[in-house]
Image (cartoon, rainbow, N blue to C red; front, side, top):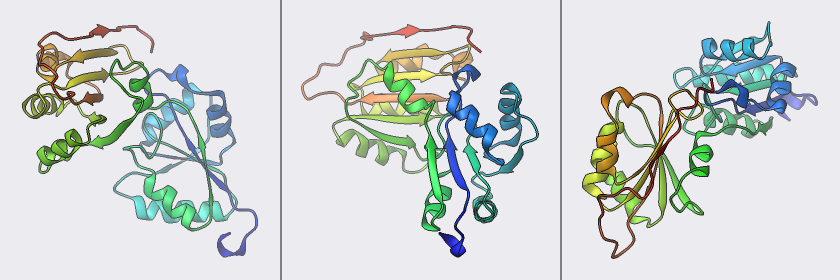
Length: 250
């Protein structure tokens, strides 16, 4: 244990709802209540969640891509003082294409205990309703914003297995265009705004999905699942599956 102390605090990595706040787990609520402070990506969004759960007076520690080193030093000192902390992100499970990886690695190297509190994850939520083969898959997270996108997609296509991407509403049309150009025969599944009012799921060739995504629909975060065409597969313009869910569940 660092500094010879025997009673360091624990960092709990807590998964929080993607959108529908009722998706919080009982263990996550108890952990947030027990923690002396909550480490969060956005203090405003964290405050909304905590108020919804009836948790008040909790110290919030900001942690994001621009203050990682300073925040990790502060969090290390708090743990060394015996304080238990919870790490949350804006939505879903921390450290999966969200801030948290560097903190977890650094704290473990220092000898602190880091424990997961499982719950919502955009990745697994999308895969659970995906009509493509997902018994094995490659998670690629976000593509580079500018340079390197084409070579990255070429590499992913060469793997010969289903791969999963995250994409923002600002680049989803660009991504579908790239997939259509580089992998026209690939099967694509899109999950958008999961657990929120405008929840939507679409499946089919990338070119068709791009046409179906009207400008007013290009909002929210996207999970994109791509299954490269099997050898000898014939290109089709008919989607094998398309469905939408517009439940008002916020």
